[in-house]
Every structure is written in C-alpha cells, then in structure tokens.
Length: 185
Ligand SMILES: NC(=O)c1ccc[n+]([C@@H]2O[C@H](COP(=O)([O-])OP(=O)(O)OC[C@H]3O[C@@H](n4cnc5c(N)ncnc54)[C@H](OP(=O)(O)O)[C@@H]3O)[C@@H](O)[C@H]2O)c1
Image 1 (spheres, helix red, strand yellow):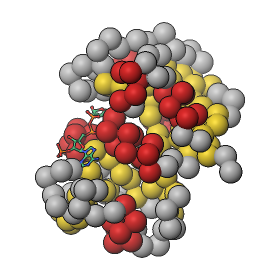
Image 2 (tube, protein in one colour):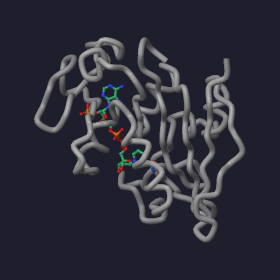
Image 3 (tube, protein in one colour):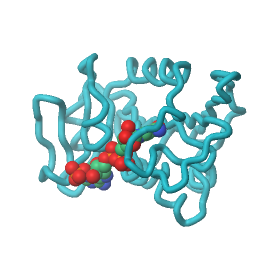
Image 4 (cartoon, protein in one colour):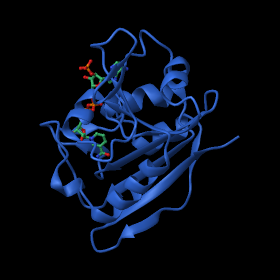
C-alpha cells in the first residue's frame, strides 16, 4: 500500500511458473475462460491497471479501462491516446498515481515479468496466482526473474510477506486453480 492505493497482482502460470512462451506470447495452454472471467471482473473494479509496454501492445483495451503503461521510452509520466505512460526512473509510483487515479483504490497489476519484479519490491498487498496443472513451458518467460535463479513464485511471494489462502478450483476439467496470496500484518 502506498498512500490511497493498494497493489493487487494477477497472473496465470504454468507448473514451472512461466507467464508466456519463449516467443514472448501467451500460449493457448495458459488461456482459460473461467480464469479470464475472474481476471476481467477484478479489472472492472480496479481504479487503474498497471502493465508493461509489451503486454499493453498485445492486449487491446476495448473497455477503455484506465491504463498505466510502464516504459523506459518516456522520461516520467505522459498522457498518450492509449493511456498513461510511465517510467519509474523519472517519477515515483505515488506521484504517478496521484495524477492518474487521484481518488485512490486498487491498482491491478497483470505483469509481465519486470513489472512483477518492480511491484514485488514496492510491495504487493495481494496476488491472485492462477495455475494450470500439467503444463510446462521450457524456456518461457518466468513470472519473476528470481524463478530463473531457482526460486519458485510461491517462494518469492512468501519471502516478500504474503501468505496463501487454500487454492480455489476454477475449472476442474482443465486443471486450473487460483491461490490468493495476501499480505499479513
Ligand atoms: N500469463 C500471464 O498471467 C501473463 C501476465 C503478463 C504478461 N503475459 C504475457 O507476457 C507477454 C509480455 O510480458 P513481458 O514480461 O515480456 O513484457 P511486459 O512486462 O509486458 O513489457 C516489458 C516492457 O515494459 C517496460 N517496463 C517493464 N518494467 C519496467 C520498469 N521497471 N521501468 C520502465 N519500464 C519498464 C519496458 O518497456 P520499454 O521496452 O518500452 O522500455 C519493457 O520492455 C505478453 O505476451 C503478455 O500477454 C502473461
């Protein structure tokens, strides 16, 4: 939590904690209708969505939700036709959100990897981690950089002060469940 904003991460990963394939795209094996509905309804109630430039480019924004797009191509904060573009090296998250979502509320964070790394250090208040059983993506993009150093996604969330609730099955036939990690104390 910073000021009036809380940070909620959202990801769907393979068994080996990958969010995308080696080609940088989300494979069909990580797409699931029940998880998509859960994710979309979380975005509907968020004050702002914060995502990386690549994810922004491949995921259109038909509902015109308020987006804060992280990119090193801007100096600080800029308003573009497709949303607000932000470089944390040039402006703090608190200042950026005061401009973009002055009413406060939930900042929903769907990644990708470097964005998740940034907010792991800033402090997630909650993280909904969905997983597809039986899917492995060799060479894919990990949810956190630390996965490449041998630490699981669960290990990273736990090391940063979050604790898991029991997993909830979203789609038994497809082997998809979601675990809500919440900051304690
Ligand atoms: N399965 C899932 O839950 C899930 C979650 C997220 C994404 N995805 C998929 O993964 C793919 C993209 O993920 P990705 O990790 O490759 O890329 P990404 O996070 O979407 O975008 C990376 C870009 O974001 C900007 N960025 C990230 N961290 C920054 C920082 N600290 N400061 C300034 N700019 C920063 C940089 O943009 P510039 O190059 O402009 O500087 C960087 O090149 C997409 O296919 C997406 O759909 C899947």
